[in-house]
Length: 235
Image 1 (cartoon, rainbow, N blue to C red):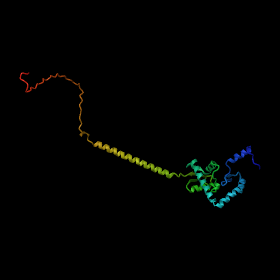
Image 2: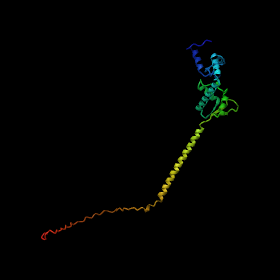
Image 3: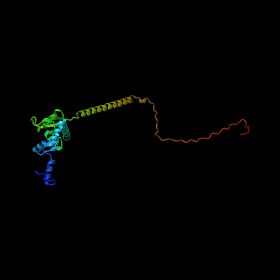
Image 4: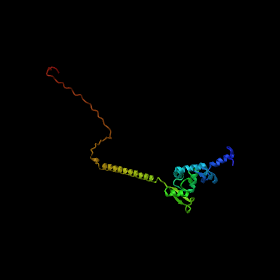
């Protein structure tokens, strides 16, 4: 079938369809290529480009490490988005997985990791204490009924913070206790001091009218001291 010409409505329609999220089982993580159906995915797996990459990985021995890298990246992105979007709230595992794959079209797909299904991955998280897993429907191994809740890994930090707050509170209580003791000691010293033994001068203020008396002063005569050389005739 001939390809649609660039600029035509058919070309734009195919471009929009290709930009959307399609079936994940037809996505090749190694080549980062999305195929539309099973036939296209089969042709891609048999293509020289894909088979060449596979042979290079097998010859170099990096196939196992590549799967581990994809698995680590998938788990990291999954847990990061779970913490951001839901925190420690309970959420259906399948619904959140739909959020995860819609968040980024070019995310690491599960078919390239060590886990073959969402149930296996959720069980792995639960066994490692990363999430709490509950079965809401009562049916074993049903990924559509599994509910997960993020385990708060900062519990130790909160515990340390609480211990520190308790220590600070104890220090404050001790400081207040010492201060109250000092206040009581000062009050006791002030109470035992005899203030009556300290002499005090009382100043009596007269509230009556002030009387002023004017007395005439007489001038005393000055006695003349006679000298031995003075004559008797001199007065």
